[in-house]
Length: 188
Ligand SMILES: [Fe+2]
Image (cartoon, rainbow, N blue to C red; front, side, top):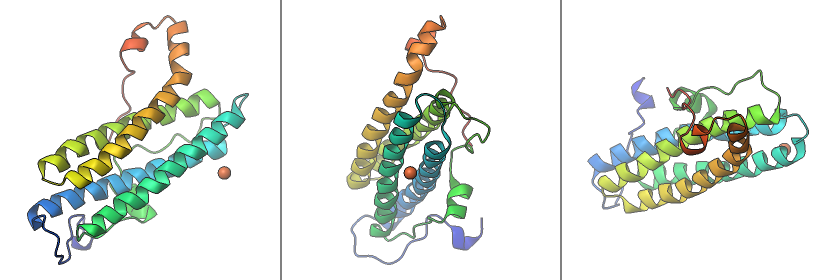
């Protein structure tokens, strides 16, 4: 990574959180910014390309979810700048810094899009939950609160997605799926 892509870059500010803590917090936030932008575009990808008998409800659901993520992109980026950091939010930077794998380009059916998104929402939910604790430990209750708000919505959306899948997993005789989650998607 070249020095001008240092996610911890800081500008002078009068805010009372020490620079050492702020540089760690803006690094975490910039990682979240990349993952949120990535997840938003992947959710739009599903919105556009989903097919099947559930087309309309999934098309609408995915758009609602992408809209929420779009709001979080702005919230996260502006928390970076409020802390004196530089927001790394272009598409190229998001692709380079995101923890998520690329969206599968060979799927069509609604259930496959729901599964691909559930895997990615679960990985993103884990990242966000870890960020709550990390930013709390760094003495920034406001950023931890921002993450808590995001976390609550993402868990709810994971439920919406998994509600499409759980009945199939139970019907398939995979009772364990009801109590333990599937093998999680590989995270970079
Ligand atoms: Fe649309």
